[in-house]
Image (cartoon, one colour):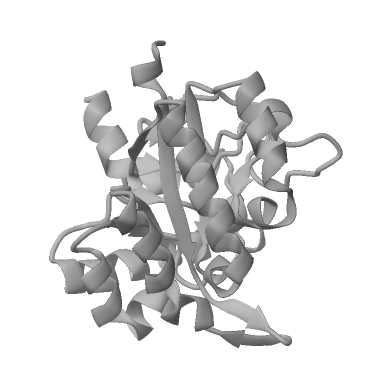
Length: 247
């Protein structure tokens, strides 16, 4: 793959946050400050929104939808390993019905809460009408237990054998070090600079949560990572754009 073919899939999981043990939506209400950074660099992104957020902030999400892809992050953000097949289906149907009532079209992409996905869940997502999923973490850092999809998977977009949909894996850096908000906040920027000197993945996922927007430190680090990716000739795409390019 040439330098021009390097892809960075950009996404935000838009969900409730916990502040002092209380469930709030402060990160959602502050998300425009994070999106302003994407606008500055003309970066498309997928916002994986929960049904709770979509219902509570429908006008705000609809406004975001003018510039960004709005996809599904489940309805209540309950982890799928705690739900029965019937409960999973109910969560998906409720989200899809709500989404259609607001956007007059069905959602295209899905990401399971906390990336907890299995073969049965993948097939359910397909049957519900989604065209791509982005729940699978194909490799994980050493000594870090992964509670989601079992087993390794391709590091680039692929079609799982158990479901005829496109999987956009959450591919990280060397040794599975992820480009996600929490890690970006906690690791020194020099760490990522070294990683990209050593290795430039053909496909990488840059993801974060709405509540990362509550951490002032996050902005300058994210901006520097964006600069690194641009310097290394990555093309920034949202999920729908990747899907359309595959067609």
